[in-house]
Image 1 (spheres, helix red, strand yellow):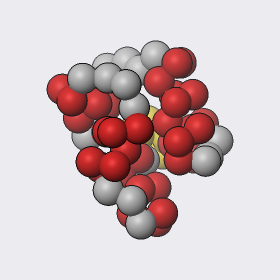
Image 2 (cartoon, helix red, strand yellow; image 1 turned 90 degrees about the vertical axis):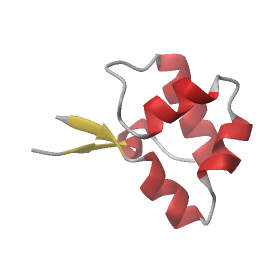
Image 3 (cartoon, one colour; image 1 turned 120 degrees about the horizontal axis):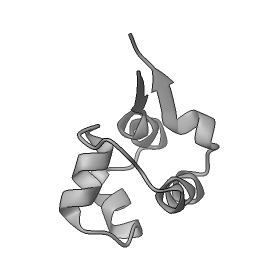
Image 4 (cartoon, one colour; image 1 turned 90 degrees about the horizontal axis):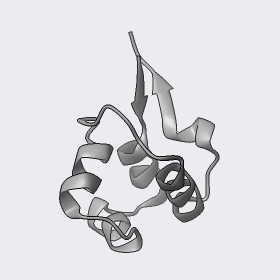
Length: 66
């Protein structure tokens, strides 16, 4: 199973979840569901936004868990 690694990336960069939410243009409910891995899908557009803001590659956003 793949999970988003956004919160760990934020911690490494010294940024908060609130900071990231302000950078993205989406509702808080959708944002929170994405970063807490409570969603079943994520748009490519959102993956691109996360990568641009966090200055990372798509591969860095995800981690494989058993």
